[in-house]
Image 1 (tube, one colour):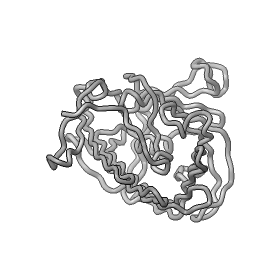
Image 2 (spheres, one colour):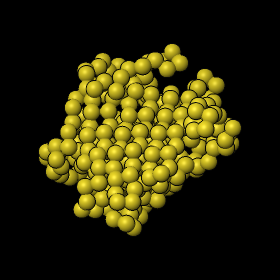
Image 3 (tube, one colour):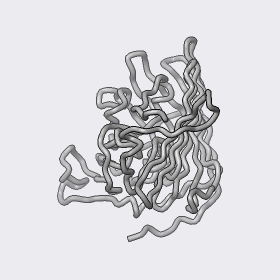
Image 4 (spheres, rainbow, N blue to C red):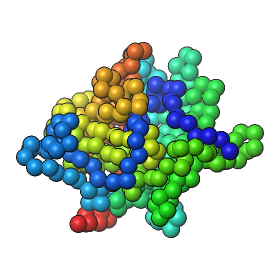
Amino acid sequence: MRTMRRSSTSSLLAAAVLAGTSHTAAQSPRLASNTSMDPNATLAATASEDIELSTIAWHFGVGETLEYVIGFGPVKAGRGRLAVESRQMVAGVPTYHVELRIEAGLPMLKVEDVYASWIAGDPPRSLRVEKSLREGRKETRHRYELDYASGALKAEVWDQEAGCYIPLTGPEADAPIPEAALDEVGFLYLLRLLPLEHGAVYRFDSYFLPHGNPVEFRVVGRERIRVPAGRFNTVVVQPVLPSMGIFNRDAGARVYLSDDDRRILVKLTTSTKFGTVAFHLRRYEEGQPIEVHAARR
């Protein structure tokens, strides 16, 4: 067995699209929405307002595909792809298999990363997570099974010598999972399902590993932008993710989502001491229509 440690991302390009964060586990699937750091504040600064994850329904059909050009400063460094690949059953639950693929390279570093998640849609929650990261000469593969009935996480790592997955042990593997846990890719899709009211702050304690909480998204404005896929009116969101330096409060990271019902992830930027990393949408393909169930009360 191997001991699970807090993962670190060696590639700035790969890290720039992730949404996992900090350091305490929690059980509530509720997210708070407010206009300041005061947990009692709200959008209108009058009375507290919460949004229950159980009222959010998945509406991204199989085949929805977003393709990106990745830039590092003025240099075109690679490409990315975010897609709903298929419907699959996991532990008897219907899920959407989604993947984020990153292929990028600089003179001294080549990145080939795949982040896969199997997400149940009502409410959104990850049932299976797989990560295959090839960054330079380093290659790691992890997979996780989330058992909500027992609240347990099964974590495994690929052992190259043995040619199979072996269990990971340690505090993170033994920690209970939140009631509606999500991985990095799951949070990208959940962000697209939020109301994104101007000035709102959305906080989560539902990252699937304990060191990744809390997750926070701030709606900072609206902007019309141009990318290779065309011109878009966008909602601008700042991800504040304490455990990842490029997404801390000083990094100035921004996510640009189309200001319509589709909430297409049009652009992502973040600043590092080495320069600016940017993902620009070059192609969008809608998925198959799906039935969106009425929100549960």
